[in-house]
Figure (cartoon, rainbow, N blue to C red):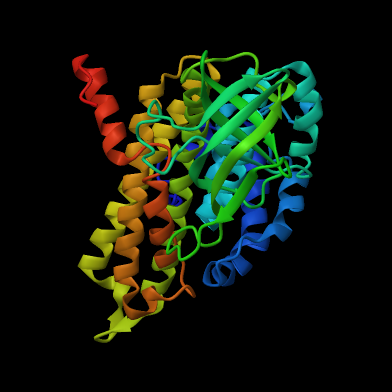
Length: 387
């Protein structure tokens, strides 16, 4: 019996019936709704906002949250599979869902009051309210403790000043989860669109994540009521806890991008004739594609175990770092190799490889660069921080 070319170790057989159903549902959505339009959206530098309602109807926004907040209580492996199948379409689509779910809905659920949960989460799950996450600042993203954005108490309000950079969904967002320095440490605030002094400016001229909205946020004496402060966390553990949730999804997502590239090049090399035979019949092409399959298989085993650890409450942030580092690296290398096997055709967005390769330049950088995650593992091994 032939092995599945994108699942050589039959990882799917290790999934529960519910997990397989989730994967199949999102895979169908990606095949039918994302892939047919995403190349044009990337060319146009346009986020396909028309897909948001469909994404929400499938239950993909805040899918792991309890039902009373609009979620479906899905486990971590199911959420990972959602990310994998969405990124098989495009990193920008997965980024939208990651930010909404892990960086916006999660902190309101984990750190917010019950009033905040009921006010925001059901509408966010329904796609009626879009969120963004404001942590990274212009002076650098790898050192969040060096935060300049600040909030000072003024009666029953807080007054925010500062700016944030490289914010996914920024110009789409109805609310922003903003982290700021206060006299009592770093705290989180729900900043609403239309608040006086709050502005978002979309970042143009991107060569990566073109089918995603990326923005800068500005706060000029923005008055935020105390009711919009996240009351249940202080310090960097708040935003870093959110990032661990989002990074977990990112460990799965690039596998989808890698599978999309391998799928495309397998079909192309069987049809492309060179020197009287298909490119797929050459040793060099087979060795390259075998190497891709090896890396994808290792990545699949890595994230499945990571997901099981997360569902068991045993996952550690350094384990997420290892998987994010490994899987982003294998995906970007595979995308580049596939672009090469496609020859000249590989430079156009009529094929997926160049689009995925360009997107992965962002994915390998955001939420912890490759170097940062390597240093996290170095610290885990030695007990010495080299940051």
